[in-house]
Amino acid sequence: MRSVVVLPTYNEAANIERFLRKVRKAAPLTDVLVVDDDSPDGTGEIVAELADELGRISLLPRPGKRGLGSAYRDGFAAVLAADYDVVITMDADMSHDPERIPDLLELVADGADLAIGSRYVTGGGTTDWPIRRQLLSKWGNAYTRAILGVAPRDCTGGYRAYRATSLAAIDPTSTSAEGYAFMTELVRRLSDRGAAIVETPIIFRDRTAGKSKMSGRIIVESMVLVTRWGLGDRFRRLVGRR
Image (cartoon, rainbow, N blue to C red; front, top):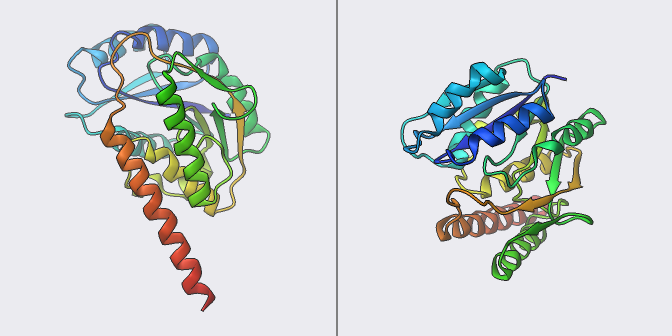
């Protein structure tokens, strides 16, 4: 299967070289598309310098800092126009172990439309997170499952492999979320289509270099959108019964 990692970046100069070298070692035949939001720390320049050395790496530069969801929409549009079988998403800050890429690819080869590297199934977890952040993430995912009626226990995690045809079928370029709610939006759309979604345990390791992009605004956006989607779905089901 032809596979590609879509990798949004903003100010990841401290991590990007190590990340790309580990991806190339773990998955030598997997392409990487780095979608960089004009990082002032030179992330894009580092990617461009490594592209020739490591191979199968391309850069999609974008003007200004435009957000995670927007970066994925542009990245997905680019790779879905190419002849890929699997589209992988992950973070560039080394919180997702590139050595797990083959495991996710195998799950898609075995029939999954979406394989999620999950923190919240048996064997998964997080390290180096304060208790407050752990509780917030677990509560947010539990709330998401309850109000949207979806099965995955980790709806917001970004380490994933999508079957390209299944991803194209939900038209990710028409999504609206910008923060980590973008991940939930894709899970919701795939679930609505009856897609085969599987989870495999991962250990999420907090970044040791660079600055986290998590903010209060991203958390609020996620809760507001999930509530809106859930209430909207319930209203439509109620109207449909009449």
